[in-house]
Length: 472
Ligand code: ADP
Ligand code: MG
Ligand code: ZN
Image (tube, rainbow, N blue to C red; front, side, top):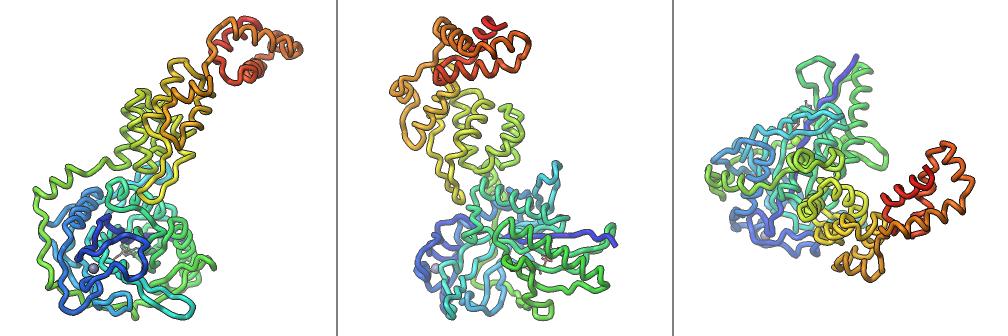
């Protein structure tokens, strides 16, 4: 029988606040274990949570970026379970009255746009981290109480590749919205993937398996592909898929059972008595909406429609918010976005190193625009521009200064160029003969020789004109 895969993802994304969700402890990554803790996030008796306003603002922004409907009054709930990384014995989350519901995310898959439903976006706190080391298990509570949004997706995805693309798009949206740093390695963007199979054409959902905490897009894709094949084999053999939670073993390339439905937790949700209902009124939502930065899809469409950049270039240039910002600033200064796009792609991107929302871009928009302006003015050739770029990168030097220092000037003196052309023709009589006899492809050879003789400084248009005249 032919089966169809059905996938729905749950993503936990850390909100970019300086302090935790319910206390003033720092959220900075990488501090020594248990140095960013207090009675509230250690879950000591009697300590009371106080809602972090910035976390609420960022959660509302997330909901708006995903076109969700906001609930004016939402509630926090206690999700009870016992685990060493959860000192209170419960996690503060939202349950039946979440912050927002019914949104969507548009994802590019196989050349078409697919709209994936978002079931809900709600707020919750992170747990700590168990660390297993040389036979001992210890816990680091620095992460305990860090504010998260959980983004629950509808079961609208149909393949492992679609799921990976959805995750990439979601991460981009959160990064451009400025709510999350997109750092999978540091755990600030994590995903649980639910997957089931059903006979093609069937409307009812099949029994699902949940794949827990997979921390790279590549692993999500591999884990889902493996899990789909495993379920297919079970069904083909006449068996039934068991509802359970499985983990991905990257070394063995297989999913492994962690716990069955029977062992699943009953979280005994109840309203959080220590926090008042969360109220986000229309004025607050409107204010957050007005500060929502332009999202990647809108940016790409604008780059193409208004700046005349190719769809591919627009995709590359919106790969990171800082790269997009550099391009836009330089394009405004220079005035020819398409040329700038080409230069940023071919030269600048090579030197850009990103880490989450941070990016090391060793050249400024002003430098790039200034450099291309020198080419426009005919002061230097395109080839010389690369040489100058190599000198300004990592420095704050003006391209004009480097041009002067290197003694670079584009040779546009026709007399000088003609002399070189004549010399090159004289040195290559056989090729000149063939070209005159009709082998037009040799023109490139002559242009190349002249550029070589002039160390790339000759104005290429003039070189072409002169060679045409002498050899045509
Ligand atoms: P829970 O909170 O217990 O994990 P939910 O009903 O909230 O359960 O579903 C969580 C996720 O699982 C959602 O992203 C949803 O799209 C997905 N999902 C639910 N049922 C299925 C199914 N049969 N196959 C694939 N995904 C599913
Ligand atoms: Mg779940
Ligand atoms: Zn604290």
